[in-house]
Image (cartoon, rainbow, N blue to C red; front, side, top):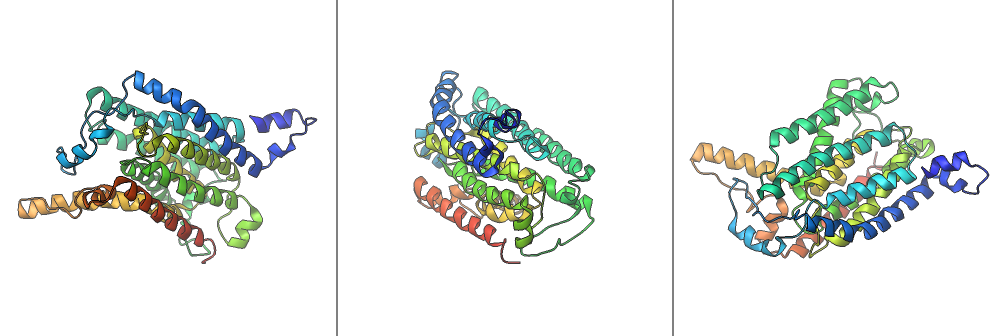
Length: 374
């Protein structure tokens, strides 16, 4: 909106609004301030509506885990669905500071669709006080429809077709594969779905998911800015994608929103983001990676999310295999996702979260190193 105002009233000395860097800084500060202002009100509203978690956690086999239940006893009654705050702040901030284009609209569409899906899931959990929530099939159908719908849309537009027709991988100057739209659409869809679910699985400790999302958002901010800069993209030999610089504003808003939510979500948490936030944030990171033609770089930057998702897949797969072969399910980890495994080993929650932050920063540095190692 502010960008449009600068065009309508050129006589006013606010030409700085035309610069992406200035609007990105403004978006980050605005999102942080909005989070601080709206946070206590949203938390109080959620508490008044009794949107809080009272149900017990479940282990990989679907049963109650007494140890985990005892460890999380102090958290019961904490308001959930705090993702409403993140989505609200992001919507307002992007509306104020970003210049609407296809890239921004696709990203915000993904955010809203997945936020509504997560809200429905959270709603079922808090009303029934059951960790099951919405059926996995329903969530997968919505995520798949959104993800592959976006992939097909990108292929149908001549200006964005290359984003799914060519396969770009880190450390290589040229695309690994050219003219493979089916594979590209599949990769785009899996990136969005996988990222959404991976962040969702990571959301199990105070500040863990939002802090790791913040780290990846910083990487995405740098990549989105570089992708739309002709000279820098050519110098670094990365894909040049027009209009992605406006995603830099979205990333800055995401960074501010994450910092603001972390203020309330750090240990001991005053509010949980719930699936409303985790599904939406993961999907947003995924769609932005697709739009800048860097889905594999997201896997490196989000190494913590990848490890969390893999731990669940390995645990469930091995449990089912051993139960079928030996008549009794066996485990690889003491509990999945991975952060609960370390908690079972005796690590304090704050230590797990801090060390995962460190691992996330290392992954972010590795992702950025792909810009020069080609």
